[in-house]
Amino acid sequence: MVDGDAAQAFGDLFRERWRRATKESLPQPEDAGGDPWPEHVPAALTKVDIAIARTEPAWKKRPLVDEWRRLTLACIAEAKQVIYMENQYFTSPLVTEALAARLAEPDGPEVVLISTGEAPSWFDRATMDRARGSMIWRLRAADIFGRFRAFFPTTPGGEHIIVHSKTSVFDDRIARVGSANLNNRSGGFDTEVELVIECDEEQAKLSIGAFRDRLVGHYMGYTGDAVARARADFGGLAPAIDALNREGRLLPIEPAQKTAFSEFVSAYHICDPSDVKDSWRLGSRRENLFQEARAIAQAAAAQKITGLGAV
Picture 1 (cartoon, rainbow, N blue to C red):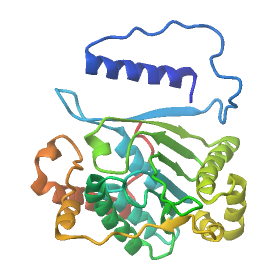
Picture 2: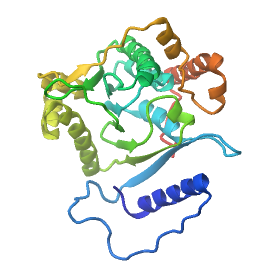
Picture 3: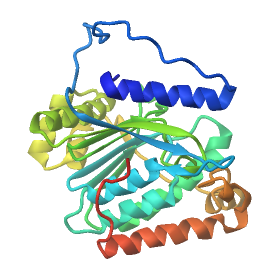
Picture 4: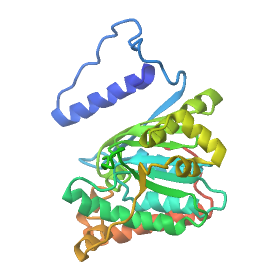
């Protein structure tokens, strides 16, 4: 929940999306006066910079907007201590290769991913889970320094929890929440929006770190403060999870065995195009994606990815 200019920008974006979909132009609401922020909700952050990162496909003479994808790659490249990602899907070779490059660095950041153990639908299991398995294998192969963890959450009774959130935290400096998945579609084919907060002021960074620690802790039945203490005691987020996860509420994601059909689906990223043109070129999708991924790896190796100028 945001107010001020950020809320105004979201309203403008909504009205434009509504106009495109329905041809109806909604008027901007009149200022009702006063402060609309509910008194019973304490503000976690005030007077901070907020950005909106979008994905809009190239369609009907409208250009591609890939702010979300460019911002994600920039955030991964700039992270120094820890990358925390909580997402429904994880199938993007571009994101995977960017993370693999950081895991290969001796002093690179930790990478913690929390996702659903197994999708509830057959379609998602075939198209998303199998492709995710390949991405997990790639990151484990790159994790020569032991800084990568991929978990799925369970209830105290052992039932699997479906993770539908799409949020990420980079160090204690950048927090993001929105609609985009860590798949190909969200980078250039679907329409997405994300709220991004970037802070360098120490008090704001403490709030962002506390937000991440609460997310991690609630899956294991711990408070965010307990996670923060464990991070300090054990030297990082991944070892803190290892220490606190005594009841096994967070379980490692194991890539599923593949049949010939699922191997084909995951190899060619069926139903997961990276943009509108890509949806019609199934035969070349795999090679195009991995050409982009190789370019990311080469650029990272040459230390050419810098800056957060995506939004």
